[in-house]
Length: 491
Image 1 (cartoon, rainbow, N blue to C red):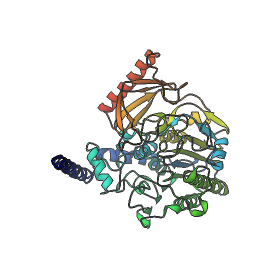
Image 2 (image 1 turned 90 degrees about the horizontal axis):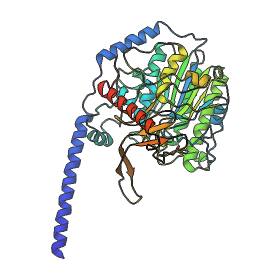
Image 3 (image 1 turned 90 degrees about the vertical axis):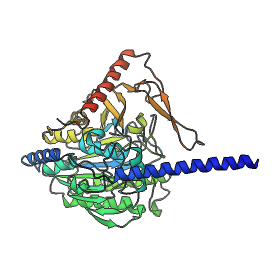
Image 4 (image 1 turned 30 degrees about the vertical axis):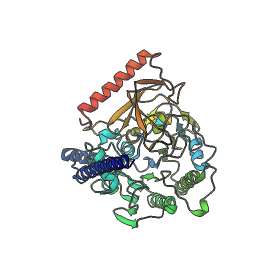
């Protein structure tokens, strides 16, 4: 027995040594990757500046140009708010509901990615995240998470939005708008890819997720609230900054990008707000954000800007550990509908008739092309935009401007869909029990879901719809070839 125990101890000691060496090697690789200076495409930076200078020669009319307020939640699920097809009986969101009733709800709207950094890149650039050069989540510079993730993805060295990318703020600033951002940036914590570098005149918020450290709040480039910032007051601070920005620029066209850190985990509210929701702390957080929406609407009304302001409310991806994904399969981090189909509300009294619900599919990459369409501004000619204008859909209704939507996680395309069918290429589907410390990807063949009757993606119908299977498979393969040939989409 002693011999067996001795042998077992030697074996476990050897395994521990090997694992320690592998960890050291991984951290070293991560260090080399994350400390490598990211380079920008100088020629494309120059062409970006030329484009923005051209826009500056044709500034928009201050009397006719709508203000734009883009409110982005972090990890809010499709069924978390009581508007449109998604409806929560557990969380009271009367201010958001009122905007939905007085505006338009898109029930088939998707985030550009199932996780936050690439999703935000897609929203702001009108390009799929691999195009925009930021396909993966980024972490604070020199953090342990950054080192580990750098070791796991050594081929993807970008740790900030490339400077050559054109953001929605870039083009609106060039067109004569005052541009401000409040909240979570999470597209790099170093120049030249900070909010003030990428088109925002003013910035107040956190540079990454609220579970990352050090969690400080910045006013432009300087720390305004030292780490660790008290997150019980986070939504309150953000709302004050947002309403102040609106008041300061009430007499000129303005663009406000308000990106909440919540309901991303961890969750916080002040003690006096705790316990108000039937949905626990998660619901308390969302109800406070709804109050924040009410404060913004009230400020717009008080400054006589509400009628000519396009307010958009959506989420960066599906819900994480908590939250309601609606009648859909999956959650944050995967390319099933629950990971990427998110709420979408647009309110603009001067242009959008109230009380409408539209079922045409759309995606966050459509935001920038839609704004170009609203302002009748030309798109850049040196790069491909993956998004399409959904202005007709918002104002009149009708079909989707897309033949297909593409579902990327990182650099990998996992699925493609049209208005009815969704094709998922052969891939692993994660399975694990509560007892298992790590889930594993179980290989699966290609699947075809008929979303009209099966929104939960429960049944493979590829044998019943062979023509649609072949058509969507070809669309998948064509996009893969295109991205292999010209990943960044340069013309």
